[in-house]
Image 1 (tube, rainbow, N blue to C red):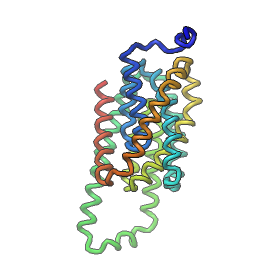
Image 2: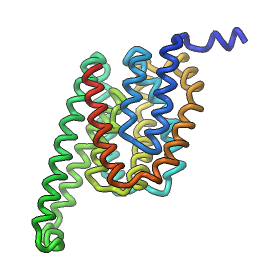
Image 3: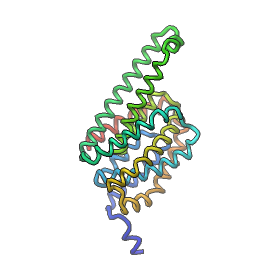
Image 4: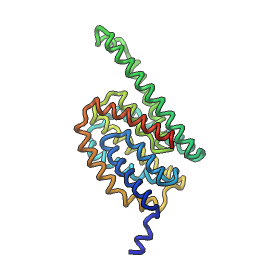
Length: 270
């Protein structure tokens, strides 16, 4: 028993309660509210040094990803995933170089500003789209006149969000709100939203592991702590899966926007 106790990281009661809360939020975010994952980023950063906290959280996020894949494995929009993943991986590489050169405060401010700008742009675009729809006497006409431009615009938007998502997930595990805004803009149904998100983050988070290891952020203490927190992630994921299938679409979309704004303000205030 003394040998086992010696393996347990000596964080103190307060930090242990914080990382347990963060693990619960990770589970919930993976199966119900993707934007909430950034709250876990802040909670872990309060309990541990900022850079080390990103690696500890990454391994728990992967556990949550596997759970979300099991729950929503038949729900993804594969076309959207194929549009996002190549640029996301480039964003991870850029983020790894940035992470190695900038301190935690600089990273948090950068991501917080990006999120607030994206929320503003997303809400404005949705408002403009609604005004056009209400002003159009024949809704079928724009589709007939659009040609290939909407597809090109969607592809360009996907590349942009993919880069931002890869960058923000590498430097702070904070891509949840970024990608939630993109899926929100695509007007995905709740289960398609969650399925696409599950596959996206499962692939990207696994891609990040060698970079985190190469930066020296994955340690024995990190692995032991995460092993102890896995049951908490699974409890959160189970609760989230039960809740997600009962959330109305409008409520879900409003929660995504609210959580994104809260996450951005939290990152800027830390």
